[in-house]
Length: 154
Image (cartoon, rainbow, N blue to C red; front, side):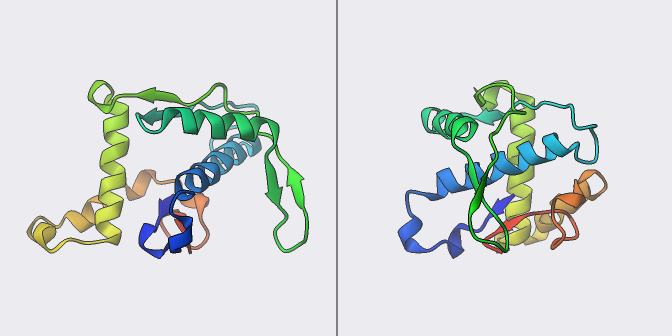
């Protein structure tokens, strides 16, 4: 998921962290719950995150386990879809101590440079680095992007 912060309304200033994590957790849970493309619907997941606003993220996760109301698309009202397939609260790791978190940071940075190119990096063709991952991307994640990237706002 790629959040386009430059397109977020000014009045969303303090809410973007909560909204972005809520969207991500819901999509992650839904993928696990339905079996996605890799599982059979009996899978569980665990979020390993970079050190961030750990208490706030833990609050979001616990709230989604108890009161997660998701709007009905194209209809009025909402459904209660509790996050039950994520085993524990997010596990924060300092990226200095985790190659997995460093890899996720690098992938996120490569996607950011693809979307928002920087002239100083042009000689290194850094805007093409994310495309190296194309064979392993979960392209089913988005029907609007050929690489499966979910952009918000669209």
